[in-house]
Image (cartoon, rainbow, N blue to C red; front, top):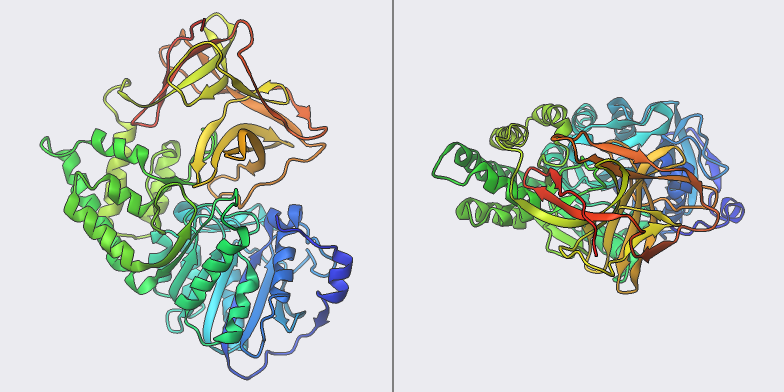
Length: 574
């Protein structure tokens, strides 16, 4: 998280609160920027919303050029002495001062009516030449949507909820200059198709965002060019975001500026590509389902976690097209061309090329596929792509054989529990079993690290765990400076909405590590996760490497194109 300053001095020098209930100034400014700040656990645990409020106030924006209004709510605790948890309040940020404008009472920020009321209030009371709306919190992509309101059972806004709010707020007739998401996974084609009726530009990340999110110093760019359009301001937002973390950051960085006037051709091209893919599955002469599933397995996916938390299924559209280029070259190239014209600015630090816009493509979350596909169908996207998703899902769940050629193999370490029953104690991305292999442990407890992400600098792994009674993944990173690895923090499991950033592991935290158990006597295994003994962090978590304990065995873990795993019977490694 950004370094949070001493609040006592901040509240005196920066967060001076002027209580007011008067209407906004009548003069029309170049911009009104509305920030829907659903604080959630980002604020209650770490004060991230407070830190961004301070950034806004210290941005140096000359407020003759822009109105900045903020709705605060959605968190159990504000980490400052001026914003209450008992009501949702609209504030104005002007000349380094945060002033209360009006209270909405205790309302649910996961309801479309709350978002609609905020937009309507801002546009009616703060008239401007252009309007921008930023949604601040967690995000989960096309199926999960945006936000967690801690006051209302982590209520969130689906894409359909946001569409309703935008429609009822009158944005179809008075479009936003830009819609921004300071949240994870919201640069999706589904979000963009919906937003196209209500905004000119979408600014969002197709990947996870760091916990610190955007750098609000971007507001000062309006001092030099107060009438810049959403594309120009979007470039500033992207550049300040990337510059804030820098080229040597161990964070995942990815932010796009999307021309919503050009989104429909992308959706149509995607539909044509997947229409021919659907037809091929039915034709004995065309590429088979297995061909498509193999390519889905290697398509760049965002928001992945350990096998206990891997339901996001958001993929990069450009990478998806590239994996299909050999099968359907004309349709795949057409999709890449329309995508290039639609994503007008994009920066990232991925280890492979990504293209700035994602889509839902069911795979890892197939256990919840019926519910997810019902949600997707109700979005009324391109019918050909929607039909393809249903066809592909049917292929995943109605496979004709349990044994398929593996597309990935790893070496697993097993602890014998009973006759032919074992508990996994490690997983290495190597195909060689031999003496001298080193296996990881956290504070002396064996762990299984699942690869989830790689940037140009850093590899990320997830260890399934329970932390202070909450399900989640411990995130471990490796890079040239950390060849032996280091614990990055915790990413809690919150359903489909993905946590923004990582929570630090602190002294006193109680942790239990999960390990997969497997019975090699059974022809079909139910997935069983053993929760280890809970231990308390007394200093920090130490990642260490050692040879396998006496009596442990190794075997191979094979993953097939259905994203299912098979294990070979463990053997003694001499």
